[in-house]
Length: 299
Image (cartoon, rainbow, N blue to C red; front, side, top):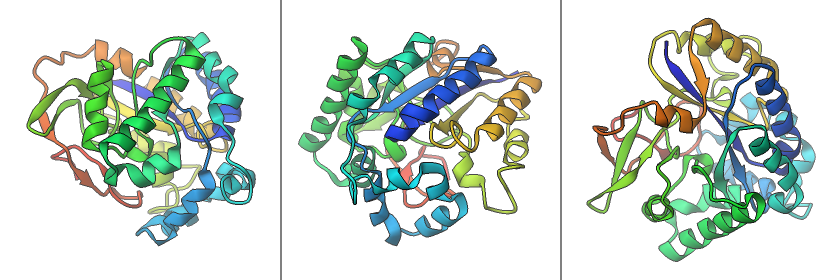
């Protein structure tokens, strides 16, 4: 039996208000808990249209029907409509996740800005963005976050160092095969990175004959072994039109005998004394446009 951590990335106002409550109902029905990572500032989803020239972006959009999953209104935020402040408008939905027993943490302040800019930004900008998210999280929850999971799996060296400065014991900011510690600037950081190990539904649907109806079966074939995994789901997808696929995954993982838990639960159940150390690295993955943080020995 393996353990599978359920990590929920919440990118938008719609995802927070509609997707999160639906996911909470699905998980509560099965007595499961997940790690919910919230975007806490403005929703500039419309600005993501600037990625049209990024290799692979148009293919991803056409495969996953972004308008269908995110809604036209969300895609206009920051373009034809003002960007709403997610933390100001949806604090109640965020606290409901905590009150239901789920682990909560920081995803980002401004999802699109972070994902598109952090790799090339300096220390002052990086700490400024992270500080905004940290302060807003404290205002909403009255406590420090349990963990952090980067928007779009995008970070820089200063951002990783900030996680240590915050005193977080673990985070999930990249992609890879298993837990490790990161070496930045010749120094090994203290927190443990738990990379997302499984492909996401939006990376799979529309590729190689995979549909919304068979994507769960495809993913379950990748979890037939007894290897611990981290699965990233999105409130806008699995908490929306892909909820049936997510339910099939939950039932399938239970049938396979896996334990489904939070990142914190997976971290607590793992001996992290002798983890490998990896350098900071970017790379590409099938179904994902652009480069993202990957484990040093990952694809």
